[in-house]
Amino acid sequence: MNTLLFFAGLKEAIGTDEVRLAAAGMTLGEVKEKVRSEYSLDQVNNCMMAVNEEFAPEDTTITEGDTIAFIPPVSGG
Amino acid sequence: MEKRCWITSEPLEIEDVTKRVIRREAGAVNTFIGTVREFTKGKRTLYLQYETYKEMAEKKLEQITKEMERQWPSADVVIAHRVGRLEITDVAVIIAVSTPHRNDSYEASRYAIERIKEIVPIWKKEHWEDGEEWIGDQKEVKPGVPLKEEIK
Image (cartoon, rainbow over all chains, first blue to last red; front, side, top):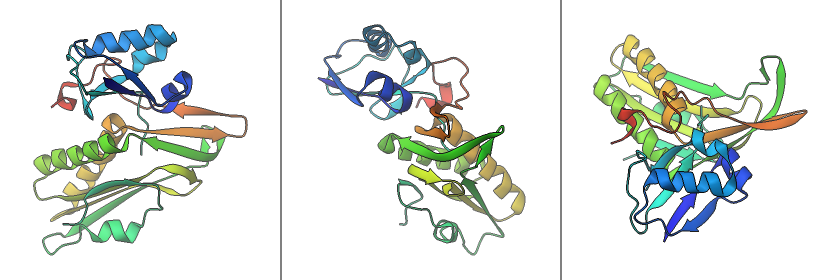
């Protein structure tokens, strides 16, 4: 299994900060599209993606146990 | 060794952060303090709520200090960011940089705050008298695609 993490506005829109998904073998882009269509949330498109706490390109293949984070536009400082 | 980068929900201590970069080789210590502003474009903020993906954010802060130490090898850097509910004038971020000469300390400090606003997973929600909104300042070339240097 894999853990998907949501933050800030995306977390509020989805209604939870964490979802479990069997994503091994999918690409990061496919996971992103799945979440976008499942929740009908175009704001997913504005997210950068991270795997195991590091930004990753969307052609990254997910492996068992990976943690996938949706990173909406950041606003620290 | 003392921590160089951290995120906390506790109030930040300016003196504590600054003194960590003071050393004999330095002739300049530059401390940038980011605070919560009351008015933005005429609109009054009541307070801010900061949220973070802490594990990743602390790694990204570490990455920024490494980038700085490559560009300014003589720089010593400490960065602390606060999260949770912050009131007007509260300190949200402190960047302390020491260098042998002042010019590098100014440049390196500026670099750090700009990078924080690009790659560190911290978000703030503005709370106004008539509503609230998550703010996103992210400077992306293309939505959803990290810059090359952000992928290592």
